[in-house]
Length: 235
Image 1: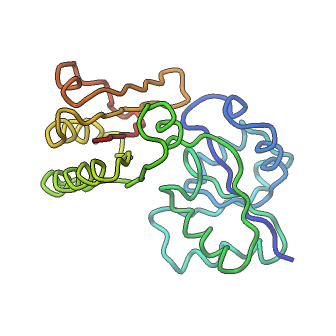
Image 2 (image 1 turned 90 degrees about the horizontal axis):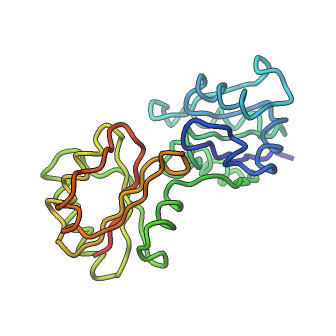
Image 3 (image 1 turned 30 degrees about the horizontal axis):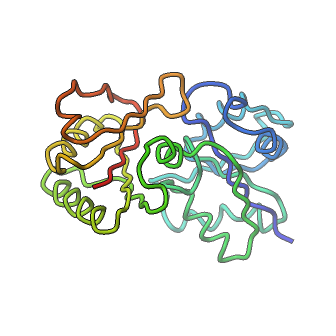
C-alpha cells in the first residue's frame, strides 16, 4: 500500500497557525516525517510553530519550486511508494493552487496515490467571499503579463469575457508589482466595471474594498507595496 499525500495549507502571513488552521489539519501534519516544500528554511519555521511530534532535525524536507525540473518530481514520490505519508506545503495558502506543488499532485494521481486536501486559508476564496462580486461564475487567471502592452490586451479581453458571461475575474501579481497592475486596471477597464482589491487576507491589516473603476480613480491609490493582494473585477 502506498502512503497518503496530504495537502497542507499554510497561513497567509505571520501569526500563529492555530489562528487559521483547524485542529484536524494540525494533528494530521504533526506526526509526518516527510514533506515536499517550496523553501526548506521557511517550511521549518512554520513546522516549528505548528508543532511536530518528531524533532525538526529528523524531518525530511524536499524542495519543489519554480526552479525544479520535470525530472526532479518523480523521485519525490519515493516515500509514498514505500508506504510513508507525505505532507505538501505551499509558501502560503493552499498547495497546488497557483503553486508548483500541482505537478506533484498530478503525478500522485497518475500513480493512484491517495491525495487528501486539508482545510486552511485560501486567499482566492477569501477574496471572492468578501468582494460582493459574482460567486457563482468566476475564473482565476493567475499572473497576468508584466509588459504593459500585453497586459492591457489581456485585461480588455477578460473584461469583455466578464461582461458576456457575467463572470468574476480573479488575478494576482507579485507584491512589488501590485501598484502597476492596479494602475493598469484603472486605465484599461470601463468606468462601470466593479473592482475589488483584497489585501493581507486573514491578517490584522486585512483590507477588502470593492467599488467601480470610476470611484477608484477619484481616490488616493491604496498602499499595496509588497502586500499580498488579490484583484477581482466584474464588468
